Figure 1 (cartoon, rainbow, N blue to C red):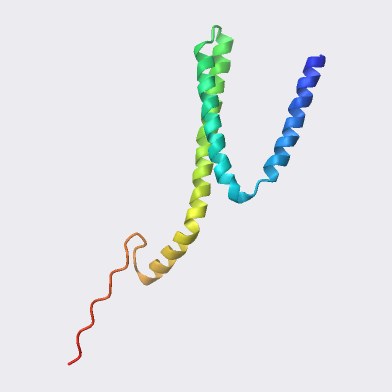
Figure 2: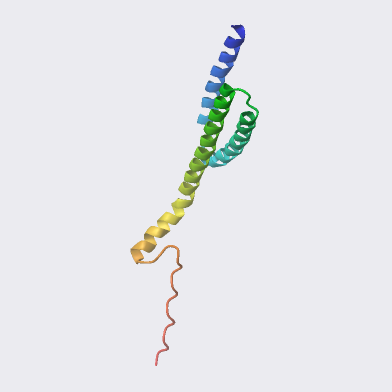
Length: 122
């Protein structure tokens, strides 16, 4: 019982520590940190696959399969969130230009055509 109480106390304290650390991260650092955690979750996915491969009983296979599924969802979700964050940062300048070009009737992807040369005065 003492071991369980010690492990449970560490678990609860890690939750509070995680909340404190995450709440102090500025939004500008969120995307780089998210990319780093995606790499860590990729390693966790490889570990879950290794555990599933070495499972001997049906119970261990089910737990290993759940670990692989959850790790895969975590990696995919991390990449989706990172991609959305990058789109938000990238979109600020480009969306404004797209809006101006759309009002002028131009395509944002194509550069504006140069003005024709002026004809000489006679």
